[in-house]
Image (cartoon, rainbow, N blue to C red; front, side, top):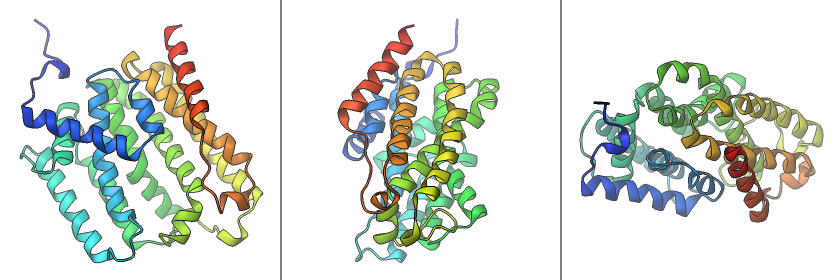
Length: 288
């Protein structure tokens, strides 16, 4: 008799409600990522959405632009969230539905503190660091994005440690590319509303096309590394990752075609009709 799969493990009503709460978070906060996760097979979809929900709640805690929300209170709430997540992953039941959903995924998919702890370290950095050097940016991107890619890879591979070791560099590269694209298109909001500059040495008033292209060259290198690994993913996740990669590749192209000073003022987006084409191509490619 074969071992029971993740999909066959029964959950309580409370656990099912917790997982549905993660769906509410992704619906409320994300368009591109929400589109991509619809293409995941179950139970992968539920697990990835549960990861996203915790990440998003932590991110909103540190990034809410409300000037009356003091840093000390943000820090207290973030530490409470980190401690609650650690307890829940260790086996405790959480009254925070998003934390409960994440803990179910972490326990079932082998996501340990080596991935969660760096994430919260990067969230703490957002409350304390307004400008990064090369070393602090690399550490920040690892914790805020690369580990999230690695969490998702744990879900995709269902406990295949050998495949995880092979594909981990590509998953990290994809997470890094997503994060750096967001840094570039959120340049104005990060600087003007949150008082942060992520790219080392970047002076926002002097930001020009040459620097834009240098940053995008680095992003495109990460995207290329990630693309090479996508065919090696299980079919349960390959379509969705192809679509997500396509969304961010399209963003990179649009950013490269946008004057640097316009990026400084306007958030570049991929229109819905172009997203629909990317999704269709991902679905067609999966059938070949």
